[in-house]
Each structure stands twice: as C-alpha cells, then as structure tokens.
Length: 451
Image 1 (cartoon, one colour):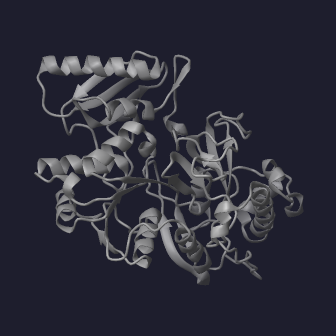
Image 2 (cartoon, rainbow, N blue to C red):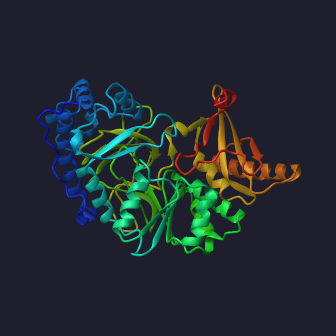
C-alpha cells in the first residue's frame, strides 16, 4: 500500500495516570480533539475510510468534537474481513507503512474467518503504557499460569508482557492437554490463572477428577476474558469457590481495538478507557443511540491507535452504558453497567421477549446437580427453543427427569417463559478449548446439516 508522504498522529500520553481522574468536561474535550485528529488521519491514509467518509458526505473539517460523532459512518467486522480480502493481507484501513509494524495478532475466528491486525511500535508501547497505569497483576517473584496460548492472541500476549514487566514468571500451558494444565497448577501454585470462565470451570472439573483440590493451590486472582460470564453472579461465585480465589478480574477488550477496560473491586461494571475509545450504545438494527438505561450494541471509536484505527465499530456486544453517576470506587469514566450482557447474534426474540444465554447461565451455574455447560438450540421460522444442560454426574432416568423439571422451573422464573429442557450425560456438550469461545446458541439446522 502506498502511503505517500506519511504523517502520523500525535504521540498521546497513554500512560499518564491523571487520565483516570480527569473531570468529565475535560475528558469530553480531549475526546473531541482526538476524534477530529483521527478523522483527518484516516481520510489521508486509509482508502477504506476515505471511501466511507466521502460516501457519507463528511469531510475531515466537519468533525470538530464529540457532538459530531453521529455524522460518521459505522462499520462492522464483516466489512473489515471483506476489505482484507480485497486489499490483502491487512486491508485498506491500514494507515501506517509496513516498516513500522512490530506485532501481529488475529481474532479467534470462533464465528468465521479470523481478522488480522498489526501494531506499530507506537501502538504497542501505548498498550503497555495503559497496562502500567492499572494496578499490578502480581508481585515480583509470583507465578501466573495462562491456560490459553499467547500465540497471535492479543489479550493473552498483553497479560504475558505485563506480568513480565512486573517481575512475575509466566507459565504458558495453552497448547498442552487439560490434565497437564491442572497438574501444573498443583505443582507450581500460581498466584493468578487466566482464561475464559467456562474453560476455567471445565478445568476445575478435570482437576477434581484427577484428585487435585484447586482451592488449596494458592490461587489468589483469576483473570477472566473472552466471555461475559464473570458478570453472572453464579459464575463468578463458582470460579471463586472452585479455585479459592479472592479476586476476580473481568477484562474487556477485543483484537480490533485498543484496550477497553475492566471491572473494579467495588462493581462488576466495566470501566472504559475514555481517553482511548469513544463509546456509544446503538440500536442493533439501525445507527441511532438507544435511550438512557436501554440495552444496545456497544460501538467504539478508536481515538489513539495509528495502524488499524476504527470509527464507530459495532462490536456485536450488548450492554447498557452508565448515566454519569460515579461508581462506588469514585470513577466517573464511562461504564458498561454489569458488564457485557451478550452478543447481538445470540439475542433471541421469543414470544415478545428477549432471551439471552446469560440468563440461562445464571440458572445452570447455581442449580445443584447440574454441570457447568449448557446451550440453547434454536429453530428459525417459527422460532422454537430447547435448553440443553448436563448432569453433574451420571444419573438414572428418574433422577434425570426430576433434574429437568427443576431446571425448567428455574429457567421459567428467570426468563418468564416455559422452555423444554434436556438433561444430558456429563461431557456430552462441546467445550471451548481455551482458544476458541464456546458457542451458546446453535441453530438446529446446523446440527442436521452435520456442521
């Protein structure tokens, strides 16, 4: 790609801890300055964005502050994937020359082809500066065990480098079998373990079957990412209980964007990095904001990264944004209330109500006699739902029927609808492997097609 006379973005001070406590009015002004600079930058250097801005009738000088964000076009992941196919390998939304690239990552590819992303040295330094302004993950000399591979995956790589800079030892077990992982936990007694909530709960079961008490392995902190499950009270409680952990960190981020944020000790709310991203909550079916306190699709504008910047990126995540009231910790930053609640693709409109997998998860993870896995089988036209769960241990037909009845009653109380429940044998449902996320909503047509 010919970038011509390339001129970069300002070298923003991402590591400045004062950004955390910046008054709301000053933060909004800062966001406006960075937004205006970003629109001009992508119009100069990215054919993808130049086409979209021109089609929307927006010139760089038209955007002078946050109040102009609605004039900009939105984008989705499928557009970026198509752009990378048309202009391989990294797409026409790439803004820096190749001699500045130092890091390569991809999305997990759970729902399709992985999206490629490169980082300039400037961008990568900003990521590490952002980590440095947050509380340390470990104390010098402590060990952290990664249950996922850091190979081309952004979240695991950030944790790896952050721990090393803080003087900790990183133990990578992502490509090893599950029994190796739990044996390493028992032998090395890490202060922190990482992974997707569902996969960590699966590991706890593997450990129990191997006679390993994960509650006695010295784990102080669980750093969970990749799924919104930690905000489900029953899931968070199960993680703490099964690993004996005192602290649960629920990280929020995605490969396509700069670091977004995380929870605090006082709340499950996701505290967003307002100096790095400008966040909106839009209606899933159109480009307009939802009302205060309404659920919508979280949409992010990258304010600082220079290589793959995105304007109004529709993340596919559903959440509710805070109304300006400070968190119990005192933060006035934008928050996703109660964390991400699900995915747009997993939102099921059923008999006049929205049903999310997280509502089923809250039942499954709290009901005695059930394992931790579940999925929703959906049939389209007319929509029909069946909930599949697993028994915690092998049961006879009578016990299975009783467990299905109790589960159905609990789900009816949670979602206000009666749904059929199938109780399967332990280990029946597919698991995530720590790299790919577990799919919770499956169209029955996929199963009948053999996919």
